[in-house]
Image (tube, rainbow, N blue to C red; front, side, top):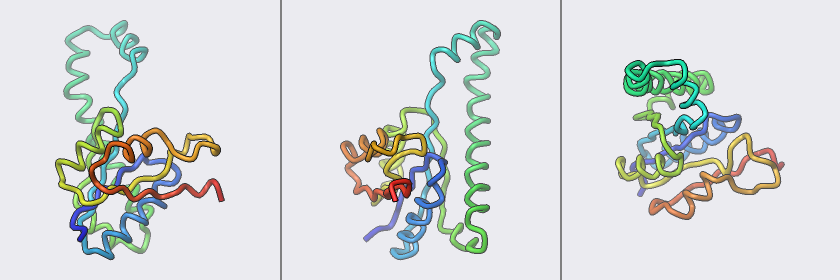
Length: 161
């Protein structure tokens, strides 16, 4: 029995398509649907540019308060994007219990969130919108399939059809 489903989104071109699968599963099983989006950490180049132009105190403040504001802003944009995508099916939005945006390595963020929620199923796309067509599986999807203790529902991307 599925009680809790975690949908991991990259917010890419095929995210609405994968969301429809997650919502259908949640509806069919009467399960709660949770959403997670991972934001990769700032790279060394961006960090060094900031260090060049911003003093250490401001940089620390940016890292702590600024990052949490950015994450909260992304969470709101994710929900607004879902509302736009859902159109007339707004009642389906009520199945979404939480939206979490976290910084870190995407597979690890997703696995950590699945553990915290006690998710019974992960729903992910086979690869990101940026992946080449000849690559059948993206890095995040591949890592989740290798490492997840939770069953993974993998939605193939449409670009191959």
